[in-house]
Length: 467
Image (cartoon, rainbow, N blue to C red; front, side, top):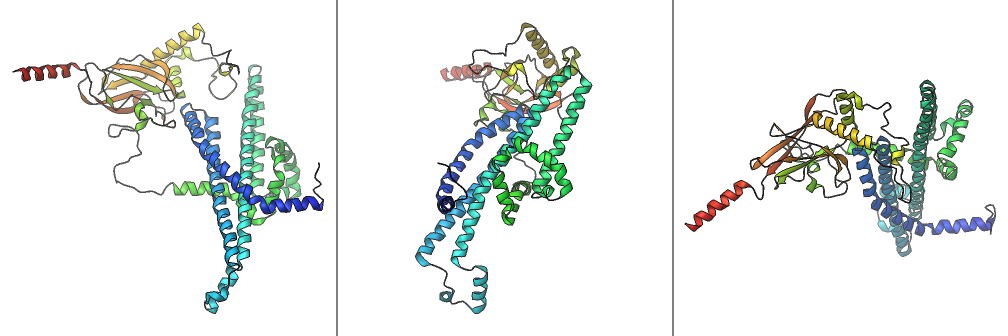
């Protein structure tokens, strides 16, 4: 049965649904808040992994997604609280009716002020209803804005990756097409942003409309705005709701930025947020301290602060600058075309069934990896208490699924007590400089369970007891 939106019957149906919608609002808000909170940790984990893997596009998208989720949770929680206040007001109205200012027995000055500013109780309930409905609609409008944002960034990234196909035919033509596309696309995004923040300002003038209209039509499909456009314009025709929808994201960033500067300083000299050094042991450099999925190794790690075995495994997390250092050390490994970064790579493909795996390492590539590791051994030096250690690195993944290099150091002759593991190599922060510098110092305590010193002590104790 098809509904005629112009018929009185359909309008009455909408009026009834509008009056009863608060129940659905609370149910949907509850499920949405639960889903957002439950999924936040998983997305945060992927975000931390993308930071470690230096996946710039993923970092940008996931950080935006996390921010949007926090905004949505905040908006929906506010909606639930105000809707609860509205329900409480309805219940109170049933018991006591409207506000009787005469029974308050206030002076004429305060009675007059309260009548003007507070008004009737029904007016208060009406305002709460309007706020709740606006917030609920705004929350889901923001979801569509989020989808639109991903679509805009996704189209840009995918188009650039496909444009690279013509790079092999003509480098000059490729650079021209790529540069032209990025300029036009970014210029269009800037116009969209100006029109959004200006509440449709580019649509109000004749000469701007001529320029903006084709851009608006194209991005109508890219952003999928044809799905939620009526909701947007219904917001824009209400002055208060319009500015809430436009300013909520900028206000969130401003408040977050300035509020992050507030906190309690417990010491003038001691900082509990510093990185691992000779004076501080941060949990991100000890594997047994990584208790949560979101805990990641920061550059390098060892098994524990206290080492009870006569060997020390050392893990170094891979970053792109390490490969740059390898290329600088041996130019024969430099490929004809650097394929690092976002794009289409056949080696990443795997069939959905899992029966076919394209990630097969050929024999010649194994030889290159072996040469790569030898150069890595010479570039990155490990020291214990300033004494150089013999290290031979292998490729590996740690328990947090971080890709990197692993070696095992011999501690058999190391005395018991506190020691410092130093990793020397090219500093990532000094761009283009590949001289060795101390990258990290990790303290540890060596107390072997079955050392030769311990056995000697046990023999002396036994002989003393026999005498």
